[in-house]
Image 1 (spheres, rainbow over the protein chains, first blue to last red):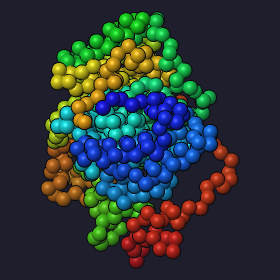
Image 2 (spheres, rainbow over the protein chains, first blue to last red):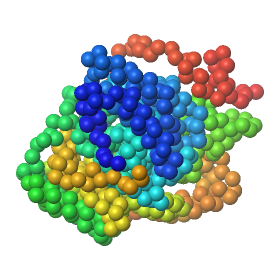
Image 3 (cartoon, chains in turn blue, brown):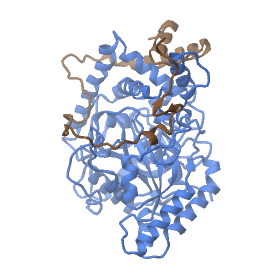
Image 4 (tube, rainbow over the protein chains, first blue to last red):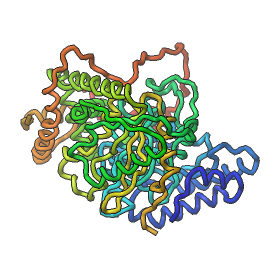
Length: 484
Length: 95
């Protein structure tokens, strides 16, 4: 298997070397052959994909093609897709055929992309391993007994295994960057507010942000150009001038100051991950960047603050699943209250219930100040840390995760241990900053390691440019797992 | 910090999630672990620090007061567990 980038496929389509229908068929056949072992897809929409591919081929023949017309993609199953099952990895939505498209989905349709289906995820995006899905765990294509990371593990595994050239993801505490890192692909979480949340099933609304996942930084930039933009249907969508995220791809790294937070290189970091990250940083220095130590002193508070704020927002957001308007309804109940409590007990899995309960507790009478307000104050300190650090550097770099992919089931009974693995990603969401993961070599076992680049607000183009320059000088992003 | 079984039962009722007695015990153990993690927050003095509710300093947009949505009742109710004549059906609430 060799890496097929979205860019190379778009060029081949434009030059009529291949049709969109041929491409869609090839990828659908690969999904059929490989997905049973990896479980990256919940729904494969063969008929819809072929119909969209035929429309794309007509547009290309008529000379009406846009930049991405006819390229296959997949959507994380958290994005509502009209007429296609949208489960969010939950039994609660096992029968939910969405009556409308998410903004991201409609934007990518307008751009001409062909959706092959919906990718697997942790239930309601609550997890770091993609094991909590009602539809079964996703396997890491690099080693099938390892997790792919999460929550966008299906998107990451599907791209890494060559089942689709690119996919959408969402990132609330690392859910794009960490699976991208653990599966050896590129993924970016934009600045909060850049990508509309309309039709993206809500987990923690002040943290949730959609973004692209693909083999290369260039592909992510091409997708982000279509995913980003103001949408009045999202109350926190930012009204900004349209930006070209490919603008800095070819900008030399000469003079780029990269801050290395000492807290991201401490005791918890596995030695083989540290070695890989240092190798990637050495490449960036060869390209003309300089590195400087910085400090993010409140890093250790990010996880406790996140596990108050995210569950609080989740308990509110997930109150909409009551078995009345959509979703699972229990078969047996004696009154309305029991219908709610049984439908929710049956429809939600263990981790989702735990987070709803934590949220209900921290928001309940008498605890609000001690937990929720306290966590928001820490959030302020964490955001200030980044602004302080970014005084002495242009971007911040470090690992995405403390280790390479761990074993399936290894953390299944210990949620706290799993939470701690998000130590390097969560603070970025609390601050609302953009950050990406780009391949940075391999662990001792040959598993991918991701380098995280964090920028200041609206620094996406600069981050993608730095990752692109690194990818021009290295071939880690072109390596593929040995799965036929 | 550890939660009592009574507290677990109380928040499960608040959250409208039915918990069997066996579930409640397993949940109690895991929630206590999570609150152990959360408690680390209390070691920090945050006096005088403004709570940050949101990454962006936003004000809610206003729009003109006019109809912008079209009626999609049929499409939306097609996915409802039980709907009839345009109404969502639930167990009898008022005697």
